[in-house]
Length: 466
Image (cartoon, rainbow, N blue to C red; front, side):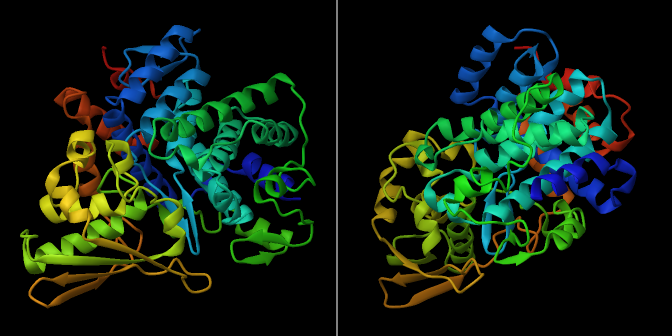
């Protein structure tokens, strides 16, 4: 039933039925994702993927961002998805009590590649992107947090299904083809969290985007697959959760169950890209580290940047963060992205961490190591159906204390960033990669995306020359 309902939704959705709020939210998400892809294109993992894709590129269907070449859509999505997640600077989506991961880096590379391949314009891209985010959220609610606890990476295994559904829409597949597309995608989905802090973590996003495109292409070509894959006894939900249950009458929806009729009524009502909306990052590290960043910024505002008076910092954090922020003594730049202690210490010393702060040298600075040794990790169990609010207690050598609680880091829908901040982030990420004129044209193209009859000019600019 879940597969049927979500497939019907994919087929019947139209750009004309999208609310203006969804179009506006989509343009913000696309601008941010293109920004972090441009910045991520400079990373070592991106160079490895670009060389690999260039060697296998096949037909010139879609742009590899800052690659200087085109490849078939399947491989372009692979490279661009990996680059988009290379810095962990990309958006996330949360629906309490679930941390769902990163939707844009799996959905946008897939739909951008297919839209370019099929000579489509802004309307098609916006609709497919909104659909992908919607599917991402609904599949996340279906599965809950057990797969993440089991070691699966949401961005990868949920993202594969989101990319597949969005790709199916761009390719105008019928309902049966969409169901088969999901069936194919389910057998391609995966991604282990043990690889966090390595180059394989961003590869998860590229693989999901690639597999979503491949599933849609194979479904169009006539490849068969189970057409009830989400709810089947050995299907997506049961296998990834490890909890076999009949969901034909009651569909899991986060912390509750709803009827199939109610689930159908909630598809696009409201669109999840609007409510709760995407959370954007101001620091290129795991979202969970941003709680440490925010408390450090608050400390700097009240006590300045002098850290010599700090004797101890107690980090009272929800227990679920233990399974993602597992680098308490990082030695590599990538490990620093998943270290609450490093991000907190770096912020205390220098303010909001930048892209260049996540290198091996920066992580191993003596001042950083001195600060992280003063931190105590004290996990607690959050209340039912809540994320839990981290609390930080700074104990001073003078005997005083400073305490803060961080419920919503900057960039969350409850503590949003405005369009000017996202434009500034785009300019910062694109500087040195695109010329001033190209940056302006790409930015304006995205902000006016609904007016573009085709994407060729923008993708040509994004291709670069290297």
